Length: 578
Image (cartoon, rainbow, N blue to C red):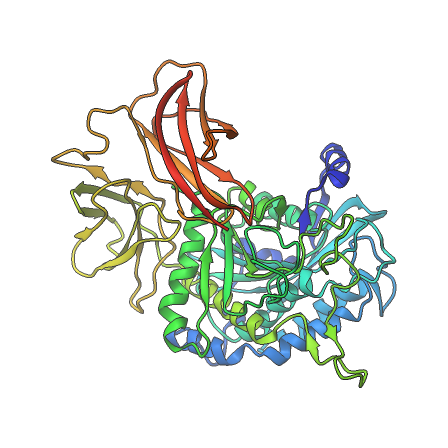
C-alpha cells in the first residue's frame, strides 16, 4: 500500500520523469481474446450451470473458506520477501517464486472447475528497483454472453516492502499488506470459477504497487489500449487485519490494539455524480439485500468520503484515472501508517508484518495478526457485488426528477423497456438515504428531504430481482414553490457531509449563475476565528464540491465560509468527531 512521504518524494518525482511501462502484453493470447469479447462462450460452459443470484449469494457464504485463506497467506509469507525488485530466478524465495506459485494455484482452480479459468501473466517492461521486466498474474472467467460484453475486475497487489523502498533483502512477508488482498482474490477465483455470469470476471494479482501503483497502471493501460469493456474494479488492499496500530492512517482506528472485525471501509473518488462513489454504494446495497439477512456475523460497510486514507494510494487509482469505475476495500483497522520514522513501532512496511506470534512457546504461531474469518466476510462482500454486477443488467440513463416539497417524482425514459427499476435518493450523506422500486410503469413519487439538495440515480432490475449498476446522479429540480433556502439567492451553501465526521468531509454549494469574480475560496476556521486552511475554488454553474481533510483524532466545532473576492457569501458549522 503506497504512501507518499517527504523521504520518498524525490523517488516519485523521478518516477514521473521516467518512461512509462512499455511492451505490455498478455502471455496467453486466449485470455486477451476473452477479455476483448472475441470467444465462443460454449467453449467455457459449465456442465452444471449455477447462475441464480440468490443461490450464488448463499453459496458464497459457505464456499469462501477461512482455512483456504489462511493456507494462501501462510504460503505467501514463506517466500521471504515479495519486493518488486526481489529475485525472480529462485524457486523458493522472492517475487518470481511467489508469482509462479499464484499462477499455478489459478491453474489448479481451473482444473477443478472444468478448465473454465483462462490463466495468464500481464508482462511489461520498466526499470523498477533494478528489475527491468515485471508480471501481473491473472485468471479470466469467461462470460456467457458476448453480444453485450463487459468485464468486472477483482484485484489486490502481491508485492511487499520494508522501510527502504527497494530493499530486496529485508524479509518483507507483507501479511496484512498485502498477502491478505492477494489471498482474497485467489479464494474468490477458486469459489467463483463454478458460477456462470453474462459478463466476464477477471481476478488480478498486481506487482509494483509499493513503487507507485505500477502493475495496476500497466493493466489499466492495457485495458484501454485493447478496448476491453471494463465495467467495475474492486481493489483489495490491507483487508484482513483487525488490530489498530499506534499510527494508523486516518480515517481509521481510534487507538492502539483496539479490535474491529465487523466493519470494512470502502474508499472511492468524488461525491456527486461520481461513478466511483456510485460503485461503492452499489456494493453496500448488494451486501445489505443479499448477504446481511442471513449473515452469521453482520458487517458494517462504511462508505468513506475520500478516495483513500490521508497521504495514501492504491491500485484503484490508475483505473479511476483511466475513467473506469473503481474503488478500494480496506480493513477498518490498520497496524501503522507506513511512515517508518523515528519512534515508529507499528508493523506496516516493516519486517514485522508477519503471520503472528507464538504465545505459549511451543514454536507454533497461535495468535494471528490477520483474522481469517474477517477476511472471509470481506471476500463474500466482494464476490457478491461482482456476481451481481456481472449479470450485465442494462442501466437506464434517461430520466427526470421533479421535486415538490418533501417528495420527488422520477420519470424514466427507457427504450429497452426493462420493466422494473430501482430509484436511489440521496441527500447530504455519502450513502443513499433510501432505495425505492418502480414495479409497474415508468414513474413513481417518493419521500425526500424537504430542504437541502436531493440527488437521484436509477438502475434497471432483471427478472431475478438483481439491479444494474446505477446511473449517474441528477439533482432533483424544484417545481412549484421554490426551495425556501435558495429562493431569490444566487448561492446556496449546504451542510457538510458527513457531519459529524472523523477525518474528511465534503463541503458543497450551489451557484445559480457564476458572477464576475477574481477569487473564490472556502475558509476553514476554528472557534476562535483563526483560519486553519484556505481552499481555492473554481466556481461553476450548478453544484460545486470541495473535499476537506483535517486529520484523524481532532474533536470540536469548526466553521466553513464561502468567500468570493473578500465578500462572505455564507457560513456554516461542522463538527469533528475523530
